[in-house]
Image (tube, rainbow, N blue to C red; front, side, top):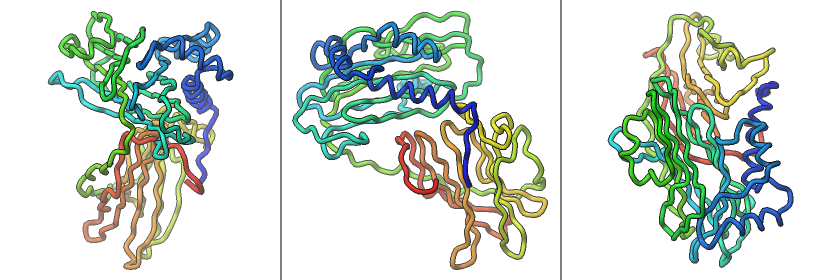
Length: 370
């Protein structure tokens, strides 16, 4: 099945391209980027990258000025990596991690295209962009490009005020020390004061706000860390639903018919109605998707969620014991999850088990069919 993007996707693609350009210095001349970086930094640390008026105009034209920040960084002696931490302030006043990523120098670099520069100084640029639904995208350029994005956040109250504070002057940094470079505060009340990254160290000043986020940078040794796959959730059950008609607010985008147990089945992919234009999928930042298996006048819902920068997929197959499997792949810019649903005829339901569920990853490269 081929997923095609409509005209509305051009705005999202342009924004992503601009984000990548930000991390490369917003200029074609590397000499200019190097000189501006050197001027901004006064030793090991991080500092705002100086933008020209033309570059500011580009940001303004995409509605990104004031919602994005470009920083230059230079690591201290012994630093071989840069880690980015994204936090959300919990109800108990404690910062909770909601994402992040890292790069490292040398042969074990996590940055695509990075070359071995062991012994050299770690330096480059860091771009941060605030998106819809309180997502945070960031790009790191240091002998290669890495990009990450946090998951959308849904708030119950209507937000009427916000305050965004970015790092505005050079900040000296040591290895293994987190330095805040951005804080974002959102509230439903009538008053909103201004905040700065330094307020990260005093979470009590954010009391009464509906959402507070922070981004910190940390220079690390760059040594490879052992990553453990998060524990998967317990088995989930998708029972048969009596009605298999049109899903409210959704449009059927793709389907595939097959036979199993002497009955006709159909695997369907539904998308948010306004995102399907002339039979094409016109992605615009995020979209609700629904995947279900239909048999007769009943249906089994296997996936129902909003997805940012991605399209879920379903695949049906029979194993050597003639059991029906439907595998759901939920692939996004910052998530890769695979759930294997097996049909249980006695329960008249699909029982699914998570094969893998990675969050905070950096998805972006593949070969072959997707």
